[in-house]
Length: 145
Image 1 (cartoon, rainbow, N blue to C red):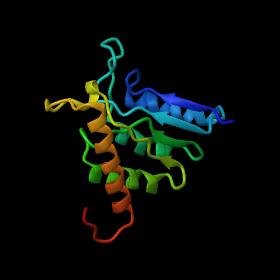
Image 2: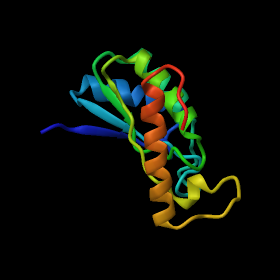
Image 3: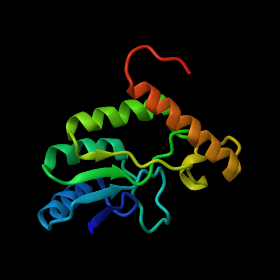
């Protein structure tokens, strides 16, 4: 059994998230999940630092803690190619310690550009396509999809 730590970006600013990751590592947690949200769930939470910048800071502040997104949507707010680049970059900053958690998104955080909010079935199909694009890009070289 492993115990993980939730780094809630809705409840904490970027500096506190990094401090919490360091303390989680010191306390013996083996992994942490960082939420990737544009908006906090409630006004009282009041935070939403950019998860990918926070991941870079955590990479430099920790040495053993495995850290991943919990979760990133690679099809609405972010293009799959951008997610592939962001994840590959963070993985180079914490070799063997980064993992990418992906999901189909939810309205509050993915609907920020005002387009139509698609059904779960459509979003799942978009997620499957995005995963295929990300994996293809990670193969390296010139790719086409």
